[in-house]
Amino acid sequence: MGFSCCTGRKSPGFCRIFCNMQIPPLGEYVKGVDLYMSLTAGMKLHGFTVDRVRAVAELSANLVEMSHDKTGAQLVWVDNGEANKLFSIAFKTLPEDSTGVFHILEHSVLCGSDKFPVKEPFVELLKSSMNTFLNAMTFPDKTMYPVSSRNDQDFMNLTEVYLYA
Image (tube, rainbow, N blue to C red; front, side, top):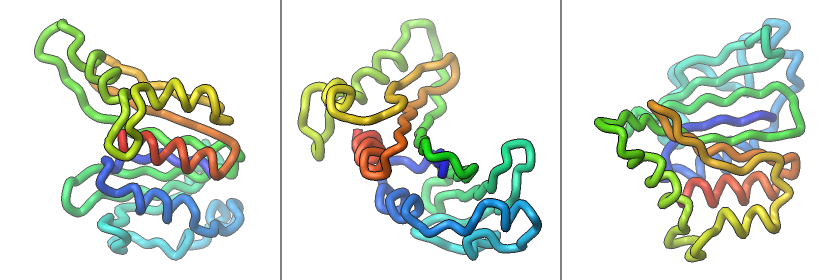
């Protein structure tokens, strides 16, 4: 399953639960089954409200859109049946000048946390993880922290480090 989420770090448990849900075969929803994973618009789940559940034929995928009740953060889950799982958290970072402050913050965020008190946890992850992608990127209007892996446990470990960064 592919997974992309923008939840903020206050809800890592949600991501862990959501990623581990049993998923019906992809074709069932694309062929017109009304309920995908028993999620329907308006349903409340771990502090999120389901906004929309739909098939995306162009991607041969199912898509669940949610919003966090307290913060308004948006979560999008795309299930296209791929073995390589992707998680990304992104933030709007609209600069007021050209000092590069958000790029500096991107690197500062990657310098450990209370839960992972290592000077450079992402360098350590690169050494020991089976990731297929591990990086962070600053664009003119946003900063993203994507990670992917084909190994379920590795994927959950990487996602947890990103959420606690």
